[in-house]
Image 1 (tube, rainbow, N blue to C red):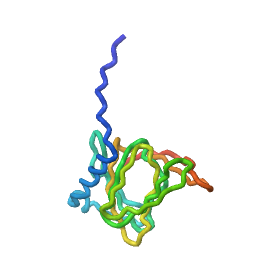
Image 2 (image 1 turned 135 degrees about the horizontal axis):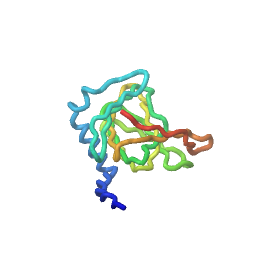
Image 3 (image 1 turned 60 degrees about the vertical axis):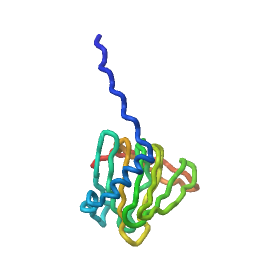
Image 4 (image 1 turned 180 degrees about the vertical axis):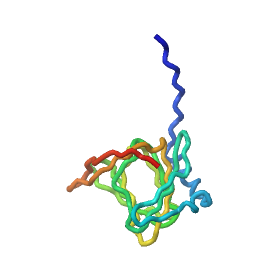
Length: 162
């Protein structure tokens, strides 16, 4: 019987704060993302800016009224910064807890751990652009529906592809 090969040690996970610094670092280099900005009336535009063995970075654009479903990040930690416009984030601290709402303006930063559930929308009147960092890279996201009277109900889990 042969011995299985030794596994290499896993890279240390990046903290949510470190992911925030990565997102801000990309935001400070508009030459790397501004030429990629596109707006699509049918759906939010997104493109991956960077992928490494430890994290990935995405550019997302949001026309007024566009937003996400309530979702998690499949066990990945993350962060996002708004580089143009204003986004509204609703967070769900538990499957039975009432959501919290906050606005994230240009220059604002949010970071979160691997069990974070939220919804992000552009409730304003101007387009918005944001940069997101995740570790590990997104492989799946789960989606939820609000339950009358409070709480969330799982809907589905989708693979993430670019």
